Image (cartoon, rainbow, N blue to C red; front, side):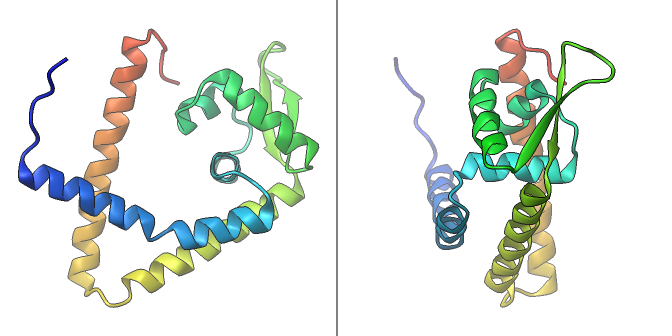
Length: 160
């Protein structure tokens, strides 16, 4: 299979993205070690912090993983006292996921520590640079979400 060549500008942007992503490794590794949780488990707790009562399917879509993968994540988090699963009041076959106090505490702590770390990384930027960064990243995220929806549609998975 022949791939079309990427422009030098795109290659440079990809490299810069990886360099920026690596800036978070220090805080990520510290949090993972302290909480003994994987990045995906921490992300799952973060999604529940934003909106409790999500289903397995909704979590799978938000995490970009399969439903069986979410089930395995939930099993470990439930055993650790981070979450609880309840039968959905609207669909007796469905399950909704809720944070337990331990899960809420960890997700809030991780969120605040990460935000403080990121603020420190950006403290030398001007207000207009921060705004430009935010605007660009919002477009990048929207592009990624659109791509994910397209991929799900191609796989025959309906987006929630």
